[in-house]
Length: 149
Image 1 (spheres, rainbow, N blue to C red):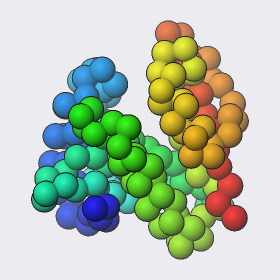
Image 2: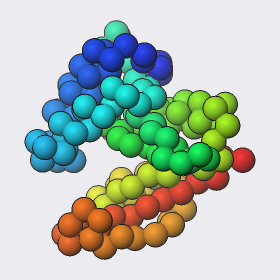
Image 3: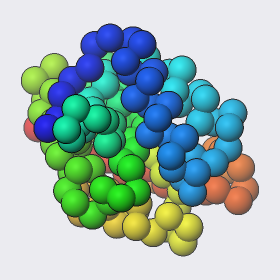
Image 4: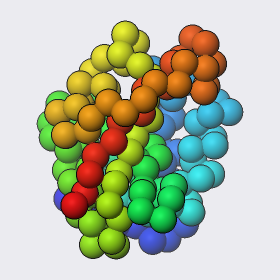
């Protein structure tokens, strides 16, 4: 089940639980903590199974017409079960309802997180631009976009 979470303490607890369980993707403590702290002020969607969170997605407004998938994580044992897709579809539905025209996501360029890139492409995202040094020279930033119209 996908729910929208409003309570800030619950947002923090869910994001911390999920991200700390995903060190292969969120292994830098400072970056992980930044995602957790920022999630409290974002639209927050959680995937819940038997009353336990198994994944989440946060949307952040980045412009008058654009939102961004700021962070998303699904517990590893639930990868490839459609949880990420369901989270995204719920968030996309909300972004459309709120009148946004575009949604974007940033990830590391293909070559490191290939499954992540393929996931976003499978959702319908299109390659927009690569910023070779936005994060650092070892993690070139790939920006994907999708029209919501």
